[in-house]
Image 1: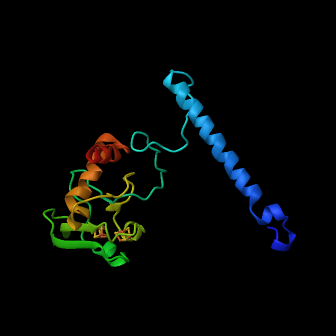
Image 2 (image 1 turned 90 degrees about the horizontal axis):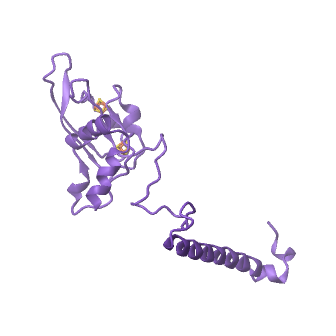
Length: 187
Ligand code: SF4
Ligand code: SF4
């Protein structure tokens, strides 16, 4: 980067950068206008006129390592895998996991969560809960972003049932299913 004493007068008044910006804006404007007119007449349909993703009609696929909403994983019989050990709640820096443990109906497991809730308004999506879990009972591989609107605080509290249902939906309908449902609900 040049020091101010080394700059020309034009550079000091930002002239080259202003001209460069005008060229880019002008190019985009005329290109998009031309392509939009061509699309109107059914031509050049394979060329995009816009550079932005037209969400929600268009969507980018989230990366495989995207850390999205949580889900509670299930055992083969559909029961919740969580054993109510509280390690996730202890590791959570936002203190947003609430668990009520109860005696498990399964004789091979000591406890299960009668209640398991995540307050997503407080969650910072750090993933510590996932790392802390010793039995892979909680994951964030739902490929769906957190809910972005609601009418009250309670709308943002995700219950055990919601978290378990996400695992069922993914198992039955695949990785994009939760996002499809979310967009449908927004509409
Ligand atoms: S992602 Fe982080 S903040 Fe959110 S529930 Fe898990 S540990 Fe807590
Ligand atoms: S989700 Fe995992 S870490 Fe959290 S209480 Fe259940 S078993 Fe323990």
